[in-house]
Amino acid sequence: MHRVTYQMGMSVDGYVIDGDGRFDWSVPSPDQFRFHIDELGSIAVHLMGRRLYETMNYWEDPANADSFDEAEREWADLWNALPKLVFSRTLTEVGGAATLATEDLATEIARLKDLPGDGDLAVGGADLAHQIAALDLIDEYQVLVNPAVVGGGVPFFAHDGRHERLTLVEHRAFDGGTVLLRYRVER
Image (cartoon, rainbow, N blue to C red):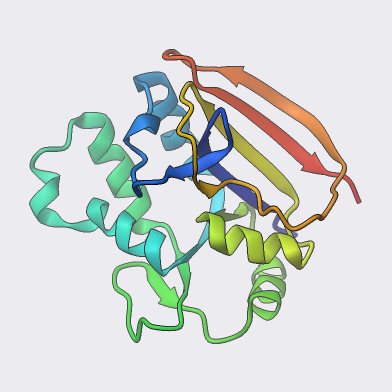
């Protein structure tokens, strides 16, 4: 059965996007970027909302590809081939390896968990992750803590009063000061 994982970078004070809608303070170092490339191989399907889908279209735009270095081309090739499921109330179509979800979150995740094969169901985007966490469907949090304090914005974790017991399963420091913390949800 596939695990549901939520991985995003956040500031030390807990935000994935700052109050101005920016996340340029979380640009990965080369060794962290290599980690992300390697991690793509462990993902079966990437779940995302409209905003993240639109942001990540950058990697599929041929106009951007000319400026990619070798690592960015490798990332783009892997990302573009990765199956994606987009949850949106406003989009009527998506492109590339993406499809629009037709069922509610719980139904779609149950269907994906039962698919044959290996790999995680990776959740991208804080809003979608908050909804999935509220359904108690996240199996692992992968937090990339960036050396920045941004003072507000979109939080990594929903502040909804829920409590979850977590077990640290990995920690790793990258050049530039970002730290990966991987926590398994205890059930």
